[in-house]
Amino acid sequence: MALNAHKLRASPTVPASTVLVIPAYCESGRVGDVVRAVRRQIVCGRLPAIDILVVDDGSPDGTAIEAKAAGASVVRHPFNLGYGSALHSGYCAAKRSGYQRVLQMDADGQHDPAMLGRLIEALDQGADIALGSRYLASDAPESSLSRRIGTRLFSWIASRWIGTRITDPTSGFQGLSARALASVVNDGFPEDYPDTDVLVQHHRGGLVVREVSVIMHERIGGLSMHRGARIAYYGYKMMLTLLMMPIRRATPLRTPDSVARVS
Amino acid sequence: MIAKLYCAHLQDLDPMHDRQQIVAITGAIVIMLIVLELVRRRKLREEYSWVWVATSAAIVALALNQSLLLTLTKWIGAASSASTLFFGAIIFLIGLTVQFSIRLSRLTHRQRTLAQRLALLEEELSAVRKQLRDQHKSMAGRKSSSDEVA
Image (cartoon, rainbow over the protein chains, first blue to last red):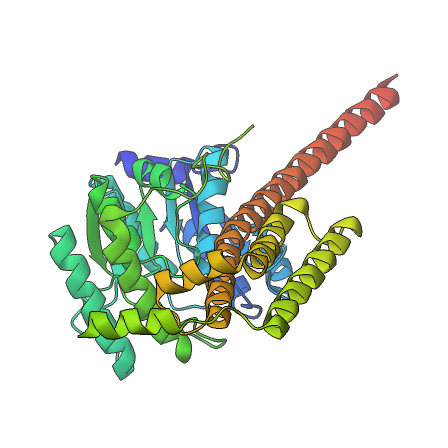
């Protein structure tokens, strides 16, 4: 009842406390549709009023212009910094603007805006990280052999470490509470592949990670960041990070929030 | 047995040939001059030059002081004085590349942080600009309507 009243009241004059971060690199032709699809959900009242922030990771194409035209705020990196950095910039922007919650989804059409409500629901129920998993549903999608092996391995590690079953640790479809947001704006956030290691770090910091079943689609076009020799590097990097985690220093800079800090 | 062989080997050690000595000293001095010249032209920062200067100085010192070089050669168990110098050079190069990797990692991190802050500030600036424009517009609108009334 109260929730419905909130939905009805949702007008642009009331600042939203939730922001949806969409990291995008060379997603011209897709990112606009994604932003419009989310806005449609809000207009229909299926989602509460949330702000949309696209982080253009230095794309040479029209990603930023397209996102802006579709009605999103845009943070634009001057050059390509990597998926993790794009996410990190989004988190820091959210922190600087005082948002309470962050949702994140990919710009390539894999993630369904209709599923954002499930993430919000999990956050409402007290989760700090709501992790959208494509493998919890009975009709899980097919994927390549290397991808399956990698997912198996890292979901096993994440599940053992965190203590609850994590089926899709590489998922970029997530919701973060204020506590989780305060933790991810740290300078130590990985710049390339933030997934299993970040989840484990959250768990070590006492945050509650909860998986939520969602439906994901095939990407509509463009290039996946998990391809070719990068997969091997990904495996190496993730194992090294995970092994280092208990013995590593927290952050390479003296001020651990040098991006989010407002001075 | 091995110890005996080792000791026998030590006594056979020759000092550097004159030619080797001259080549080593000349090479070290040339490198030092190049490094100092680069500093003079401001192509190399002082903080990066001292490792090179120190190494060149060490090579010259070792080439001039043969007994020190021989002691060092015995100590690391090298076959000849020349290979001691080579070994030192390789250690130096490895140390230098590791140092470069560390500095690169640090620079990468700083450059990433700067780029991110720049991107966020740009977005905030454009939002503030838009707000200001809207304010101006609404103020201008109010002014013109009050003019009409007057």
